[in-house]
Image (tube, rainbow, N blue to C red; front, side):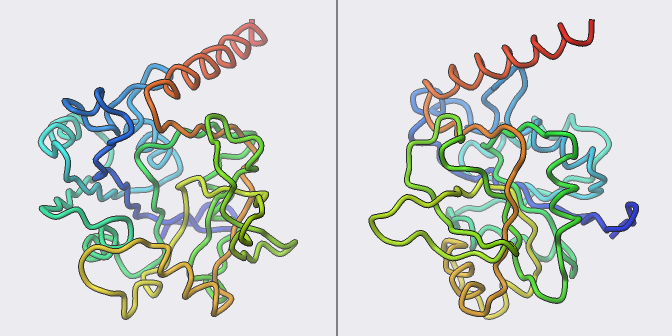
Length: 251
């Protein structure tokens, strides 16, 4: 890991890009969801840009649906060491990261969904995560955003969070104040004794919850849930409007 001021930024990251993107059809029949453009750039490139800017040196990207298109796209990427973890069988979030662990080293690493969009506030979100990460008491640190402020999100939220950042699951028939953004820091020990094959990382979150080792921080910038073609239009309009407003302020 490389030192950045008083905290340490993970040098490795996993970008989850293997999903089928079924809710995005017909767009994803010929294009993997991470290669769809939002705000003028592919979602995959936006994730990689932020990881590279944070100081990450090596990124592993998993592929499954139309893998050659993602792999060809990444072949043109400069400045990052990129490893490909191709999944012949879709392994879900937990199985996908478990398969890629040999690429990710033995220290804490970032894991980012390739189909999420976020905008930083004054401090980049990845640095905020690294600043809060505590090796001694955490197995996973999730970036959350306020459920009511998540653009394009219509669910009931995922987690409750106390003043120290410790998480609990949303109670049944209640709305939780926070939704998981798809951005996190994980330690390889989270995957110790994990099941083989395809499984959701939620199974490992639950184990960390029971041990009191699942934590979160609240994102202080914008976050966009881009799950359908209509959601792309919503995110595009809001991102371009805000970027235009910032440009006008600068001039």
